[in-house]
Length: 256
Image (cartoon, rainbow, N blue to C red; front, side, top):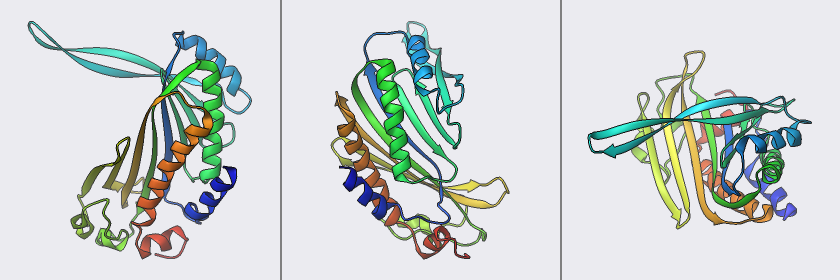
C-alpha cells in the first residue's frame, strides 16, 4: 500500500516550482460514543502538544428555521470548535463536534506530507473521541491563479473539459461557474471557477475542486485512506485534464 501511494505521489504531484494551491483540506465527519466534547478536547490537547501550539477556541453560529402556529421562527445555536496550529508549518487541525478538518495553507507541501498529516490527526482524534463510525469524507483543493492581463480570456489558462461549460472559457471578467456531479452512487464532485481579486488588486481566478464520499460505516485507517486516495485521484483527474499550456508554464515558474 505504501508503494502505491509513492507511485501516486510521482504521477499526480510533480514538484512544481510555483504550485497554485492556496488551500488543501480534508474533512472527516464521524459519530462517537456518548461523551463530553470538552473532555475529549482536553485529551486531544495532550496528544497534540508536542507538535502544535496551544489551541484556540472559536465559535460559529448555526441557524435553524422552525415552523410553528404563528409562522416561521429562526433559532440561533452557537457551536464551539478548536484550532490547532502546527509549530513549524502553515498547517491546521480544526476539530468540531463530530468533524475533523485538516488544512494545508500557503505553499502546498505535497500529497505525501498532507496524507501523513491526515494520519496523525485522525489517530489522535480517534483516541480522544472514541469514534464509532465514519459518516462522510471530503477532500478539497482551492487553486488561486493570477492573471497579469485582465483582458485575456480563461481559455488562455483552462482548456475545454467535461467538468465545466465551454462557454465560460470566453470570459474575461465577472464570471462564475459551479458544476455538480454524481460520479458514483456514493461520490460527489463540485467544480467552481470564479473571478477573484487578490491582495495587490490584480484580478485572478479561483479553480476550486471539491469532492465528497459518503461512508456511513466503521472503518480503520487503511480503509479510510483508500477512500481519500480515490478522492485525490478524482481531484487530480479534474485538475490535470483542465490546465492549458499557460497554466502549466505558470506552475513550472516560467515567465507568463
